[in-house]
View 1 (spheres, one colour):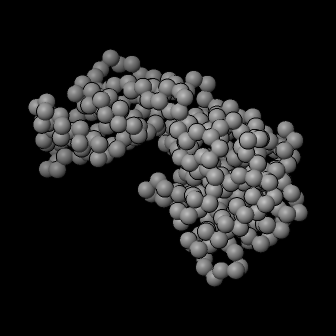
View 2 (view 1 turned 90 degrees about the horizontal axis):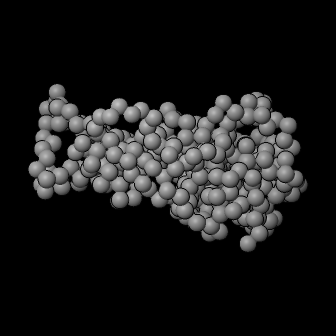
View 3 (view 1 turned 45 degrees about the vertical axis):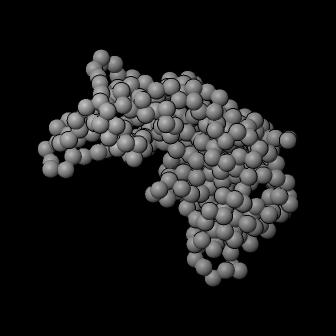
Length: 311
C-alpha cells in the first residue's frame, strides 16, 4: 500500500507508516484537547513537502485559524484554507482544487441542503460523512474528519460514521497535563493497538522525546500509596504510576474517586481485597489516580492498583 509520509514520527506510527491515499480517517477527542492544532501542524508539514493540502473549518473564522498558524509558526506553509459548513459548496471547492490531503474540522458542523435536519443531527452527520468519503474514494485524496466526543468518551453522532471510514483514532489527555495520546481503535491499513504520544508546548504539539517514562511522577517523597505498572501500547512499553489514598471518611457514605482507571474494576479489586485479604475499606474514602493523564485499560494493571491501595 502506498502511503503519504507526514513527517511527524508519532503520527506516522499510529497511521502505520503514513496516511494512505483515497482513505478516510475519523479523529475524535474532547473540545480543546488539541485536535485542530495537531491536524493544522500535520497539514502544514505535508504542504511544505509538496503535498497539495486543503484545511476546511466549520468552527473558526479564517482570521482565527491564521492567528493560530502564526502561534504555531506554520503561517508560511502553502495550505489552502476554507471556512464553510455547506457540504455542496465544500465538495465543489474540493473538486476544483483536486487536493491530495483534506482536513474537515469538524463533521458535526456540516450540513446538506438535501436534508431538513439541523446541523449536527444524526441524519446530517451520516449524510455529510457518506458524501465526503465517497468523494475521497473517487478522487484519491486522503481525508481526515474531526469529530467531537460525548461525555461517555465515544465520538458524537451515528456509529455508522465509524463504519464508513477506514480508520478511527481518539485524541486523549487531561487538560491539566501537557501530554496527549493519539490512540488507534480501528485501522484498515495499520495496527490498531498503536499509540502516538505528544507533548503540548508553547508552539503546539511535538512528539514526546522519552515516551516510556513520561507518565511517572517527578516527585519522590519515599512514601507509600504508589505502584509503577509497565503497560504495552502497541510495540512500545509505557511506565505508568498508579497513586492511591485511603483515608477515614467524615461522611456516612464513603467516597470512591477514580481518574485514569475503570471504576467497576476498582470496586471489584476492593471486594477481593476485603474478602480474600482481610483489608477493611468500610468507612474509608478511596482515591485512585494514574499520573500524567494516562489511562490504564488492560487488566494487568489491576495488580498495580491493588499494590497502591495496600501500600
